[in-house]
Image 1 (cartoon, rainbow, N blue to C red):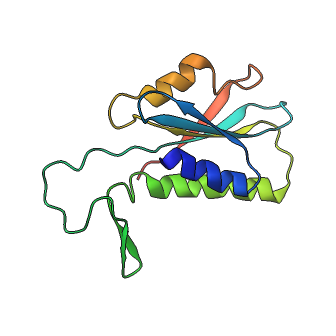
Image 2 (tube, rainbow, N blue to C red):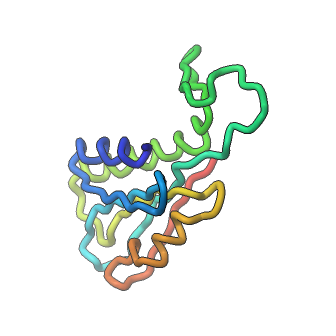
Length: 143
């Protein structure tokens, strides 16, 4: 599961996260670097799911992540795993920098973006992204 791999990477860098189950074999991941609470939080948001491989013929195994000539081929390698990797590295670098943030920095990796938005809807409904009752700014990445 992608959420577990992300949680492991963040944990190895000293950032705790929560995996939020949203159904059979589907989950969100939420990580937070706490700020002072003086300013609103910033959410880095991206999705972990992909659309199905469909009936089209694939030149490379869709879930194989084949590396050829410094390129990775596979379903989801650019939409959205590249964006998720950038957000994860940004979280890690901010954490390593030791700077004091005025608002929380939240990483939200959702499921269901390509189908039913169940991941984002669950985070909003249960208050997972709430931060000191302050407004939140969102930064989403999409290729």
